[in-house]
Length: 330
Ligand code: ACO
Image 1 (cartoon, rainbow, N blue to C red):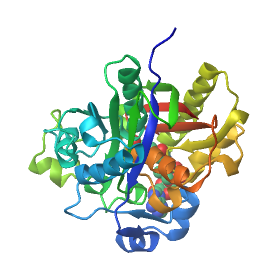
Image 2: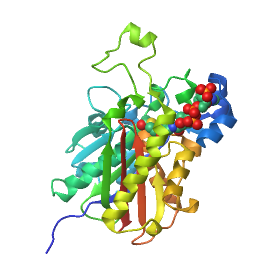
Image 3: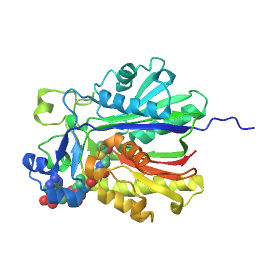
Image 4: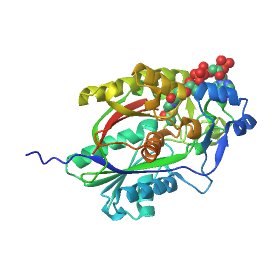
């Protein structure tokens, strides 16, 4: 008899700050137009955290919501994994800050940096920890305060990003969504395409780096776009091959919400019709690591799904990193 535990997402939660930054607000900050933003990205607005609201606070709100849905207490959590590229501090880690905010006193705490693919990297590690029998309950949190690293004088990036958080309780028992497979990839040769050049050990913060605005996020959007479509499609196909499923078997595709044109291109390449593709990009923009599970949380609240339904999650981000995950309702 096979007694190996099977990892499942037992509860999902998310948090979006109240403040809305609309396209017309951005028209007042940089040389852009609502028409350009809508046609090139599909975004109408995004959420921005207050000064006091940090990555750890948003992560803790999402974590509490996920714990409530999972009917698991903070004291039951063995490990907290936080995916973020906008941590409260370089040190200490954000996972530890959230551990104390939610009272998960038994939990170990680790941050993961895989930019927009962070949630899927976290899910993969959680699956391995649960299925190896190491832990019973792993809390995977993705939280981003991108607005702290965005240059609101740079029209190439400032229109794209928003703040927000999501969380999932991954357990060895209970009802939810089996994590059937997670496929991940990376290409460090292309690290320069998405970068915050200064503030790390290679270029520590100095007056010069601040004057050159090198502590802000930079992206070569057009190059990233090409890789995003190709890599997410590849990871998604690997997931389908690993589980013996076809694209037709997928009830919903839940993609990273970086750009409506990227989402449409992946769906088209995979022959997944638009009505099976879940989108939040118009209202939240790109919330980096948080985006996939924010979308997943909203999907599960809005739609009635059935036993054995399959969901395909795909993501892509700086690193470069990419990944896909196949979930099946228990
Ligand atoms: N308003 C008006 N014009 C603009 C704006 C703006 N906000 N931003 C750029 N432009 C201009 C550019 O300057 C350029 O002008 P030029 O032709 O005179 O030089 C023109 O618009 C076209 O620029 P492109 O870069 O060709 O525009 P594109 O159609 O590629 O769209 C975008 C840009 C939206 C960034 C797109 O490339 C994209 O979405 N890329 C992928 C982003 C992504 O996937 N990110 C995920 C990783 S992020 C992470 O990991 C955190």
